[in-house]
Image 1: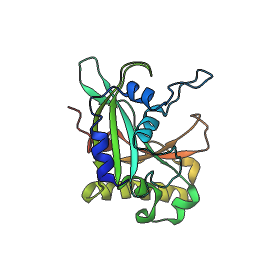
Image 2: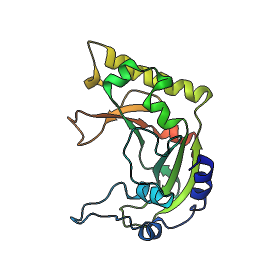
Image 3: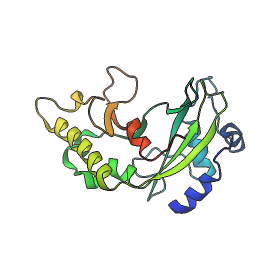
Image 4: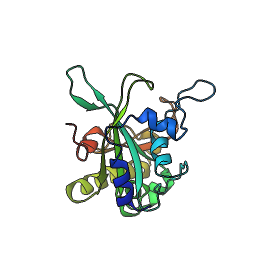
Length: 204
Protein backbone atom coordinates (compact mmCIF):
# COMPACT_ATOMS: atom_id res chain seq x y z
CA UNK A 1 0.00 0.00 0.00
CA UNK A 2 1.35 3.41 -0.96
CA UNK A 3 1.73 5.95 1.81
CA UNK A 4 -0.70 8.49 0.35
CA UNK A 5 -3.42 5.84 0.17
CA UNK A 6 -2.81 4.73 3.76
CA UNK A 7 -2.82 8.37 4.87
CA UNK A 8 -6.22 8.95 3.27
CA UNK A 9 -7.67 5.79 4.82
CA UNK A 10 -6.33 6.58 8.30
CA UNK A 11 -7.58 10.16 8.15
CA UNK A 12 -11.09 8.74 7.76
CA UNK A 13 -10.74 7.49 11.35
CA UNK A 14 -10.28 10.95 12.92
CA UNK A 15 -12.83 11.34 15.69
CA UNK A 16 -13.77 7.65 15.63
CA UNK A 17 -13.99 5.40 18.71
CA UNK A 18 -10.94 3.14 18.51
CA UNK A 19 -12.45 0.49 20.79
CA UNK A 20 -15.21 -0.14 18.26
CA UNK A 21 -12.68 -0.49 15.46
CA UNK A 22 -10.62 -2.92 17.55
CA UNK A 23 -13.69 -5.08 18.10
CA UNK A 24 -14.48 -5.02 14.38
CA UNK A 25 -10.97 -6.25 13.52
CA UNK A 26 -10.80 -8.70 16.43
CA UNK A 27 -7.90 -7.02 18.23
CA UNK A 28 -7.98 -7.87 21.95
CA UNK A 29 -7.28 -5.28 24.64
CA UNK A 30 -6.28 -8.06 27.02
CA UNK A 31 -4.77 -11.52 26.63
CA UNK A 32 -6.31 -14.72 27.97
CA UNK A 33 -4.34 -14.22 31.20
CA UNK A 34 -5.89 -10.79 31.66
CA UNK A 35 -2.64 -8.97 30.89
CA UNK A 36 -3.09 -5.74 28.94
CA UNK A 37 -2.10 -5.87 25.27
CA UNK A 38 -0.02 -2.68 25.20
CA UNK A 39 0.19 -2.70 21.43
CA UNK A 40 -3.53 -3.04 20.75
CA UNK A 41 -3.97 0.43 19.25
CA UNK A 42 -1.15 0.06 16.76
CA UNK A 43 -2.34 -3.44 15.91
CA UNK A 44 -5.81 -2.08 15.26
CA UNK A 45 -4.49 0.46 12.77
CA UNK A 46 -2.42 -2.23 11.07
CA UNK A 47 -5.40 -4.57 10.77
CA UNK A 48 -7.51 -1.71 9.43
CA UNK A 49 -4.95 -1.21 6.67
CA UNK A 50 -4.66 -4.94 5.99
CA UNK A 51 -1.17 -5.34 7.43
CA UNK A 52 -0.14 -8.51 9.29
CA UNK A 53 1.58 -7.97 12.64
CA UNK A 54 5.27 -7.23 12.15
CA UNK A 55 8.14 -6.38 14.51
CA UNK A 56 10.87 -6.14 11.85
CA UNK A 57 13.24 -3.17 11.88
CA UNK A 58 12.29 -2.52 8.25
CA UNK A 59 9.51 0.03 7.77
CA UNK A 60 6.13 -1.65 8.18
CA UNK A 61 4.95 -1.18 4.63
CA UNK A 62 8.32 -1.33 2.87
CA UNK A 63 8.60 2.36 1.99
CA UNK A 64 7.00 3.96 5.05
CA UNK A 65 6.42 3.39 8.76
CA UNK A 66 3.24 3.42 10.85
CA UNK A 67 3.46 4.82 14.39
CA UNK A 68 0.91 5.52 17.12
CA UNK A 69 1.18 8.05 19.96
CA UNK A 70 -1.07 8.85 22.92
CA UNK A 71 -2.46 12.25 23.88
CA UNK A 72 -3.93 13.00 27.29
CA UNK A 73 -6.25 15.77 28.40
CA UNK A 74 -4.87 17.68 31.37
CA UNK A 75 -7.06 18.96 34.20
CA UNK A 76 -7.16 22.40 32.57
CA UNK A 77 -8.51 20.83 29.37
CA UNK A 78 -5.28 21.25 27.40
CA UNK A 79 -3.96 18.43 25.25
CA UNK A 80 -0.47 17.05 25.99
CA UNK A 81 1.57 14.11 24.79
CA UNK A 82 1.30 11.30 27.31
CA UNK A 83 4.65 9.75 26.44
CA UNK A 84 7.54 9.67 24.02
CA UNK A 85 7.38 7.51 20.89
CA UNK A 86 9.47 4.37 20.43
CA UNK A 87 11.18 4.38 17.04
CA UNK A 88 13.52 1.39 16.78
CA UNK A 89 15.83 -0.78 18.85
CA UNK A 90 19.51 0.19 19.04
CA UNK A 91 21.83 -2.45 17.66
CA UNK A 92 25.20 -1.33 19.01
CA UNK A 93 27.25 -2.88 16.20
CA UNK A 94 25.00 -1.47 13.50
CA UNK A 95 25.04 2.05 14.93
CA UNK A 96 28.80 1.88 15.45
CA UNK A 97 29.54 1.27 11.75
CA UNK A 98 26.55 2.88 10.04
CA UNK A 99 26.29 6.56 9.05
CA UNK A 100 23.02 8.28 9.79
CA UNK A 101 21.87 8.34 6.15
CA UNK A 102 21.92 4.51 6.12
CA UNK A 103 20.64 3.99 9.66
CA UNK A 104 17.59 2.09 10.88
CA UNK A 105 16.59 5.26 12.72
CA UNK A 106 16.34 7.33 9.55
CA UNK A 107 14.59 4.57 7.63
CA UNK A 108 11.96 4.39 10.37
CA UNK A 109 11.44 8.15 10.60
CA UNK A 110 11.85 9.70 7.20
CA UNK A 111 8.59 8.43 5.70
CA UNK A 112 6.47 7.77 8.78
CA UNK A 113 2.77 8.23 9.38
CA UNK A 114 1.82 8.99 12.98
CA UNK A 115 -1.68 8.33 14.27
CA UNK A 116 -2.33 10.29 17.47
CA UNK A 117 -5.16 9.18 19.75
CA UNK A 118 -6.77 10.72 22.80
CA UNK A 119 -6.61 8.35 25.78
CA UNK A 120 -7.98 8.16 29.31
CA UNK A 121 -6.61 6.82 32.57
CA UNK A 122 -6.64 3.18 31.51
CA UNK A 123 -7.04 0.95 28.46
CA UNK A 124 -10.81 0.71 28.91
CA UNK A 125 -11.38 4.47 29.02
CA UNK A 126 -12.85 6.08 25.89
CA UNK A 127 -10.23 6.64 23.20
CA UNK A 128 -10.55 8.29 19.82
CA UNK A 129 -8.31 9.22 16.90
CA UNK A 130 -7.12 12.81 17.30
CA UNK A 131 -5.16 13.30 14.09
CA UNK A 132 -3.08 11.61 11.42
CA UNK A 133 0.07 13.24 10.12
CA UNK A 134 3.23 12.44 8.20
CA UNK A 135 6.89 12.80 9.10
CA UNK A 136 9.13 14.12 6.35
CA UNK A 137 12.54 14.80 7.85
CA UNK A 138 14.23 17.78 6.26
CA UNK A 139 16.07 20.98 7.04
CA UNK A 140 16.96 21.84 10.62
CA UNK A 141 14.97 18.96 12.07
CA UNK A 142 16.85 16.46 9.89
CA UNK A 143 20.16 18.02 10.94
CA UNK A 144 19.28 17.85 14.64
CA UNK A 145 18.12 14.22 14.48
CA UNK A 146 21.38 13.38 12.71
CA UNK A 147 23.27 15.16 15.48
CA UNK A 148 21.35 13.15 18.09
CA UNK A 149 22.28 9.93 16.25
CA UNK A 150 25.95 10.91 16.06
CA UNK A 151 25.95 11.60 19.81
CA UNK A 152 24.78 8.04 20.42
CA UNK A 153 27.27 6.68 17.89
CA UNK A 154 30.18 8.48 19.55
CA UNK A 155 29.19 7.13 22.97
CA UNK A 156 29.06 3.57 21.64
CA UNK A 157 32.44 3.97 19.91
CA UNK A 158 34.09 5.54 22.99
CA UNK A 159 36.20 2.94 24.78
CA UNK A 160 35.68 4.81 28.06
CA UNK A 161 31.88 4.78 27.77
CA UNK A 162 30.28 2.38 25.33
CA UNK A 163 26.72 1.09 24.85
CA UNK A 164 25.94 0.74 28.57
CA UNK A 165 26.47 4.48 29.07
CA UNK A 166 23.68 5.48 26.70
CA UNK A 167 21.15 7.52 28.65
CA UNK A 168 17.83 9.23 28.09
CA UNK A 169 19.49 12.54 28.90
CA UNK A 170 21.11 12.45 25.45
CA UNK A 171 19.59 13.91 22.33
CA UNK A 172 17.48 16.99 21.64
CA UNK A 173 14.81 15.38 19.46
CA UNK A 174 15.73 11.68 19.69
CA UNK A 175 16.97 10.00 22.85
CA UNK A 176 18.50 6.56 23.50
CA UNK A 177 16.64 4.95 26.36
CA UNK A 178 16.27 1.69 28.18
CA UNK A 179 13.64 -0.55 26.68
CA UNK A 180 12.21 -3.51 28.52
CA UNK A 181 12.11 -4.11 32.25
CA UNK A 182 13.47 -0.69 33.16
CA UNK A 183 16.48 -0.09 35.39
CA UNK A 184 19.21 -2.61 34.69
CA UNK A 185 17.88 -3.60 31.28
CA UNK A 186 20.60 -4.42 28.74
CA UNK A 187 18.57 -3.13 25.78
CA UNK A 188 18.24 0.38 24.40
CA UNK A 189 15.96 1.95 21.82
CA UNK A 190 15.66 5.29 20.05
CA UNK A 191 12.67 7.33 21.25
CA UNK A 192 11.24 10.52 19.76
CA UNK A 193 10.94 13.17 22.45
CA UNK A 194 7.71 15.10 22.92
CA UNK A 195 9.24 18.23 21.37
CA UNK A 196 9.90 16.24 18.19
CA UNK A 197 6.31 15.01 18.12
CA UNK A 198 5.17 18.58 18.59
CA UNK A 199 6.89 19.57 15.36
CA UNK A 200 4.44 17.41 13.44
CA UNK A 201 1.35 16.99 15.63
CA UNK A 202 -0.53 20.15 16.51
CA UNK A 203 -2.28 19.77 19.87
CA UNK A 204 -5.28 22.01 19.33
